[in-house]
Image 1: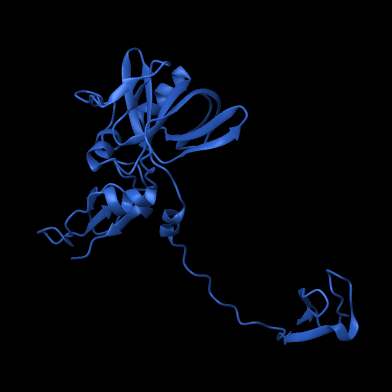
Image 2: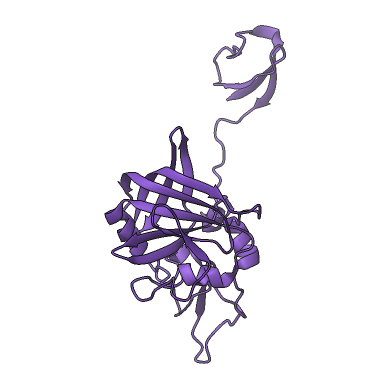
Amino acid sequence: MKKYRCTICGAEFEVADGEKPVCPECLMEGDVLELIEDTPAAKQETAAPAADPAALHRISYGLFVVTAQENGKDNGCITNTVAQVTSEPVQISLTVNKANLTHDMILRTGKFSVSVLSQAADFALIQRFGFQSGRDTDKFAGFADCARGADGLLCVTRGTNAVLSAEVTGIVNLGTHSQFFGRVTDMRVLNDTPAATYDYYLKNIKATPKKIGTTPEGQTVWRCVICGYEYVGDTLPEDFICPLCKHPASDFEKVTS
């Protein structure tokens, strides 16, 4: 292969050995094409770098408390999967793990509320709504920092900066999760505190446990980088799911002392 640069339009392109070079942009040929590289016919293959799940942490997400109500019971969970999908009408998408009670309540009632977490949120708020199951506990018990909207759903007013309410218009089955699409029926700004991104949570809100490489018995400790849950064992199963935050094994790190 030979690589040329067109001195007329600046385009760079490759031509197989023996073929006449013609600029694909301006169709010029001849002396106006400058040979800049004569690539050997056989290139040495380089190994592709190993996949690094940490790359997913570089994608920018917000953080939200998603709430629902069914038969007089209020519940909510933490998620980072809310996004606007259309502006007229205003619609948002929400993806929820099927293991969450909130998922089933939204599926049956067809509506949900989203409280946008701000940088004023603390780890206790994340723990309340993210690290326990509504099947076992009442997440709103003794929690006064909330208000009921016109749709009848509770929204969180502490550590949040906006609230949106939505009615489900479509559902996509994603295996372990469901993606809900909802038409926004109400949306309000609570304050001007900047929203907390997923990256901000990892760096500024998430509690950092003390590093302990092994147990007294010499067993290896694996820690979830999202919530801090620790798994003890020489190896972490590839299909392991964090029982607290529902993140996969790729979000666990081997703890070194």
